Amino acid sequence: MRAIVSVIGLDRVGITAEVCALLAENKINILDINQTVMSGFFTMTMLVDTSAYTQAFSELRQALSQKGQDMQLSIEIQREDIFTAMHTI
Image (cartoon, rainbow, N blue to C red):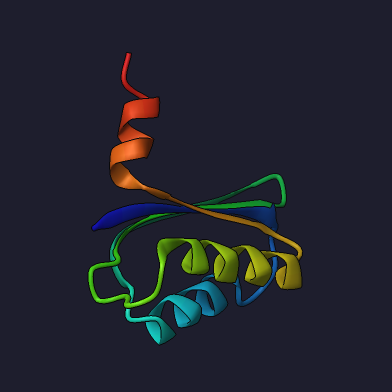
């Protein structure tokens, strides 16, 4: 299954590294990544493959949310099919 991960917060060194490390620890493969910094705000969107992840998707969502809290960022994950449906007119 593929999913969309979004990361938003104040820019600082190491955001990409820490988020990617958490994904790698959970056998999540990054298929595509886009990031930018605007006026000191960091934004990153990733398309990821979660097929090798063996726990419930809700646990991955919680782990990313907790990592976001620890880093003072907003980190969200959403299944690709739901994300696509929400953004289709």
